[in-house]
Image 1 (spheres, rainbow, N blue to C red):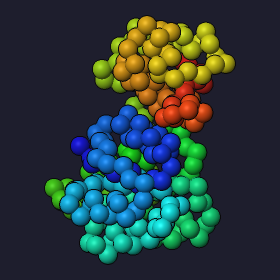
Image 2: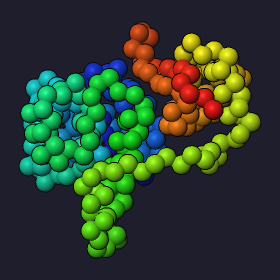
Image 3: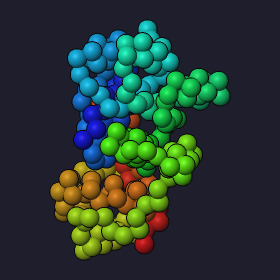
Length: 227
């Protein structure tokens, strides 16, 4: 299980980051912080494998946070999630060891790919891996993506999948939250989330973030390319 902390001053974005992370095993959110100082204080006594970090924050931006993190002798991986996309900022952040860079707004699939890329990197570089040959090192440096398995994910049921696909075929122009889908199709929200996550990963559904909820933002799903 990878321990993740989120450092983001916008509570709506932080909630989406948490939701996306928790939809992607084996990642677990250990804490969420609205400023870098609070996160650094927490890290003095706790372990984090990965930090989901915003760049624009009050008092301490993402670059300064990373510098202070390294100065404290800490080296968790960092995925930067931000609207800062100018070439100079990206270059400076990558030179500080940022493993991936997500530009707001982003979709679940791209966020998930960033987490999975980190997991592959972490697994390849763990001490028990031993020596790496040239091909393994080239793959790490190139950050090549691993193709998704086209088969049905373990634990998913074909008949349940057909029910969900049929519903989206019948409503191709509308989008739904997992709660709305659960009510319409007659399945639990947990079941719906498992299937919509897989359908989004395979490109059969598109996901978007709805901030106009009056509270915690929600993920909405719509028809894209159902089989």
